[in-house]
Amino acid sequence: MSTSPNAKVLSISGSNDGLATPAKIAESKKLLPAATTFVVVDGGVHAFFGDYGPQSGDGQPATTHDDARTQISGASVAFVDGFDK
Image 1 (cartoon, helix red, strand yellow):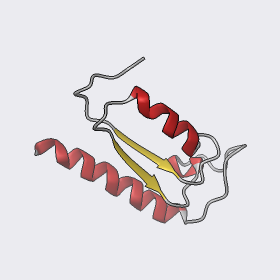
Image 2: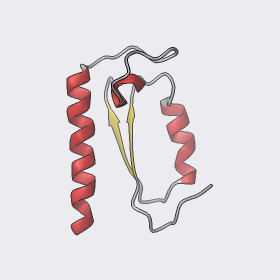
Image 3: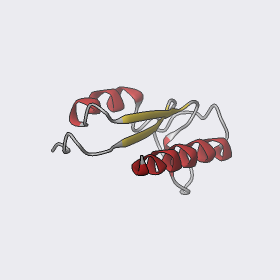
């Protein structure tokens, strides 16, 4: 599976994610357009990308869930706002 080279793609991940690990994110880069925007939530874990509680195999957070949500939301809004430019 690959994406269009012209697709706008945002990848947001957590630096302490034990499931979608930084290594897995790095490996997936070859499947995404070169202009993909990558944002890493420093100290973020997999469980911070939803509201379902801790996940088996996840890493240990080094930031708060509120701070992670603020970073995730901010990056998402900035990415979408960039569509008008």
